[in-house]
Length: 259
Ligand SMILES: NC(=O)C1=CN([C@@H]2O[C@H](COP(=O)(O)OP(=O)(O)OC[C@H]3O[C@@H](n4cnc5c(N)ncnc54)[C@H](OP(=O)(O)O)[C@@H]3O)[C@@H](O)[C@H]2O)C=CC1
Ligand SMILES: O=C([O-])CC(=O)C(=O)O
Picture (tube, rainbow, N blue to C red):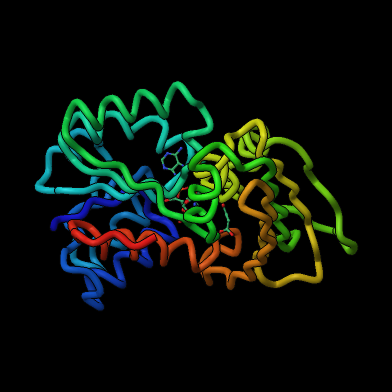
């Protein structure tokens, strides 16, 4: 399996290290696409891959699958062209799918070209539970409370916990596109972007990116908290988010699906 990565940041570098250096996946990253020439050239040299600033050259190269590890706008701009070029796709910036029309467009394009799109669980768990709970439409409430350090939310001078947002997931991702992709993953697995409630709290007392998920319905109820260690290179992003992409790559082509 030849893998192409969109993005030259923190998740991209983690994947390159795990795959090209540590051989954690049966496959190799042969191409990286991005806008940051210096970062891209550095990655290409360190991890023996090719860097492209031109999307067409990247997508026409010998890749089988593309991992988006960049930003919501990158997922929005390139998901359809990736599929039209006959490649499977794994998307980290699931916030792009807040737009239901875009989701349908991606679904139709994948179907037309016989490709698959994987939206990994990212920095949370519980998507399996929400899907089961809503199999007959019995899921009633889903809420996620995200607590991050002020620095990882781009804030300075906050000495006490401060609620920055309380509202539907669709609005939350517009305000915090680099911090609440997890809320979109939960929305897609459960009851949608309007009914899924999101609270974002800047909390100087936390070092871990903490997500508390609460859900209720005909199945019963659940409350679970994930205390994520941040990635060293980018405190906004939890280590689990990068691991979830790696797990998706490890599972490619696996005939047995768990969860
Ligand atoms: N599903 C989940 O649970 C999670 C999802 N994510 C998503 O994954 C993404 C990547 O995370 P991470 O690697 O930590 O982020 P980084 O900030 O470390 O890296 C982002 C990369 O994307 C590039 N980029 C950003 N915007 C654009 C753009 N408009 N056009 C082209 N390239 C762009 C950056 O380039 P440059 O250097 O030029 O800025 C950089 O190479 C996040 O932005 C977020 O959307 C993150 C965490 C959890
Ligand atoms: O990594 C995290 O904890 C969550 C995050 O940034 C996102 O969902 O965008």
